[in-house]
Length: 348
Ligand SMILES: NC(=O)c1ccc[n+]([C@@H]2O[C@H](COP(=O)([O-])OP(=O)(O)OC[C@H]3O[C@@H](n4cnc5c(N)ncnc54)[C@H](OP(=O)(O)O)[C@@H]3O)[C@@H](O)[C@H]2O)c1
Image 1 (cartoon, protein in one colour):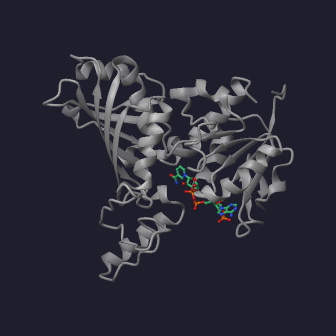
Image 2: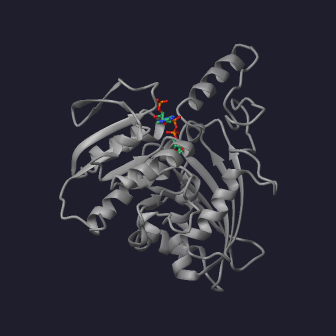
């Protein structure tokens, strides 16, 4: 622990979709930053980015880049984290990582500050930021779980293309033009850049996000399942997920079915615990067609919840619709909030 009041911060992947938003929130939330170092691959080294009206030259990320760094925010893909996070820690930095590299490591806290900030004190140098689709779901489920208990979660996602990196929205736009011009659509990124086949996303829905696992689920689905259990510290919680990519640019939507432990809970009871809960905005009024959508939730910090209904057959079952900006609360904002909490709780 230090008595420092301002910190040297590095952003690894500063030129990417998440990195760009991390820089925005470091500035907007006014983190006490002494020096900001921006790192990328050799491709973007030399590029100039602006932070607090000052130009900073992007450098290639190397092991020695972390000398003198107090906090390193990683969003450059799992292999970069695997290669460089340990080096950053060796140089004395605390790493907050956006990739899946360390999320399930028992020594690494997996943090959503509204849900499990108390786990932060257990960190040993690396802290993981959960998957975007997990973050928004656990923020919305936390007050329900606290008030009524939670035994089962079944989620189907409707995810935006920006979740697949900076290039994916361009692919959607190109394919849209091709489709409207009666041309054949070219697909090179989705459903998963590293997989063998690619399918058009424009005017389509792809039931594959990330690659398939041996059990028939995709890696994205297994992330949602395993991360939810870890964040709630409840390995026996029943969680199932189906993750689908839609031709939406920003904000993931989720249809979530939950079973609570307590009998006799009403929709009004669920509204009451959601209303005013940290990080949540309730938008739920069928009489005025009020509910969140990806477009209405984009560029906003909160997790929006609507369409709360009681299951017609199970007294303990409820259906919800949860929407949030995947690049903001789903990634960059949560990362910056972890850094803020570390500083506030004097854990650095
Ligand atoms: N998009 C989301 O909604 C979301 C949400 C949560 C987590 N994440 C995770 O965050 C990570 C980044 O996602 P993204 O959407 O921001 O991707 P992206 O737009 O493709 O950006 C990737 C960034 O990583 C840098 N990079 C690539 N290879 C590198 C290397 N060898 N060394 C150093 N930097 C390197 C790139 O630099 P260059 O400019 O030099 O290529 C770029 O800055 C991924 O692991 C992703 O799973 C994404």
